[in-house]
Image (cartoon, rainbow, N blue to C red; front, side, top):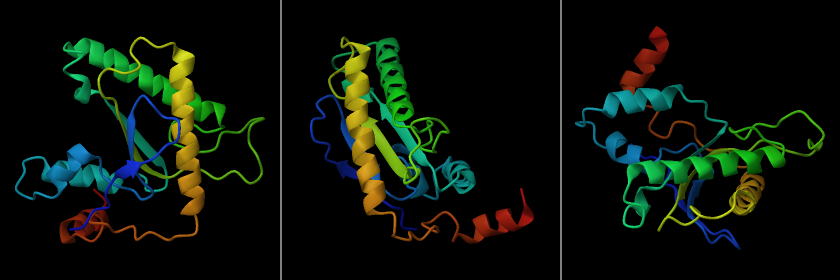
Length: 180
């Protein structure tokens, strides 16, 4: 079953992380290995989770495992991950979106604003951003959100096939008909 890929997204001015983005509803890289191997113990669990997720939202996740050589304690990598997540949530909020890329009601809402969609991953290498001030992280996250907005505007007219391996499976269709 073919699944859309997350590709490297070039963000001008971004110095703290690498971004992998797809304008389509795509599995995260760590889940892709499980989804493409039907003999994996977690295959059906992950596949069913992906069939139930809404396809028209922005899904994103922060990974700091690449910083293991610099931040050898899991607790410090988790702290860095939480800082990045809060910075991205703040950047989304400042641009008039909630954490899923849906438009918020308020003074920032413009009449031509569109919700964000797709999937992206933030890969933090070398523990970058751990000792920076929070406004710098929010500014870097804002660069990413602006790039995702541009990608969403560029791909707004495209109609992506929603059955990338999730809905065209015989077992998935049977489960969905049954209503389980």
